[in-house]
Image (cartoon, rainbow, N blue to C red; front, side, top):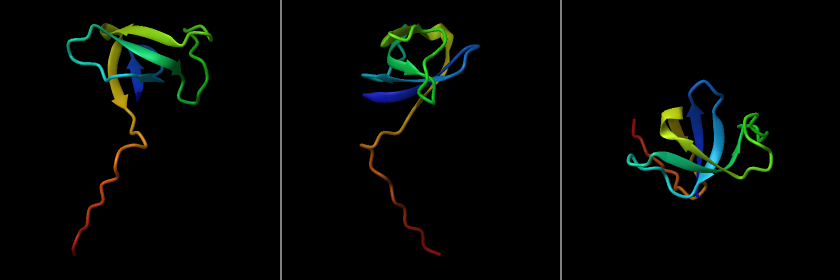
Length: 79
């Protein structure tokens, strides 16, 4: 499961989860638990809705949030 930050055209961005990251050939993305970044409900989605489908033409870009599973890269620099 991946957490994403979706930037829609003419709307505030929102946070959601996706099972798999979208591929370039997809026509839409399926988002689970859409919400504002502060956890509040989106004004254009009913409170009981748990999944939404958004067509690509509505999306400006998507940010993939880091998960706790990813390793932290430690780099050593020498002066």
